[in-house]
Image (cartoon, rainbow, N blue to C red; front, side, top):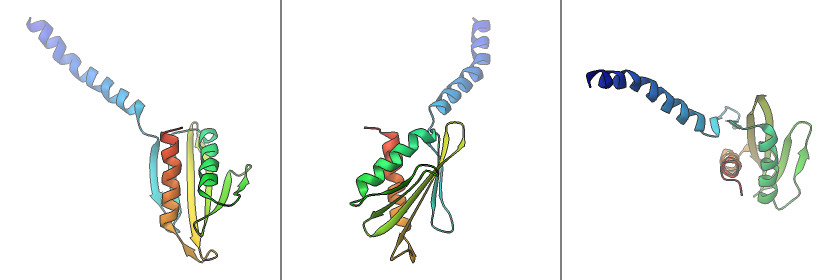
Length: 132
């Protein structure tokens, strides 16, 4: 009886580590999100750029009343949303990882609109987390 109890206590740290690894593997989509000094939101995603980029285009297209400008080569999209000019860039920085940057400007590019950039960034991440 004592031997079985002792063996169980010795094995407990091993199982706890397995549970922690399993929980980490499930992990979140957003690895890091921050606002830099020039009011550009940067989000690092735990998802391949080929899955992020179509969602960016769809989200901007749905939010804008006008046609959006897309550059597939540099994965850049520009849209006019509620009087702001919104720019989103996507790039792969590692295998199955993406950096997405969002910037919004008002009044012909003279004033940064950090709230709009954050809102668009959150919409894109929300769609990636809950695809339709």
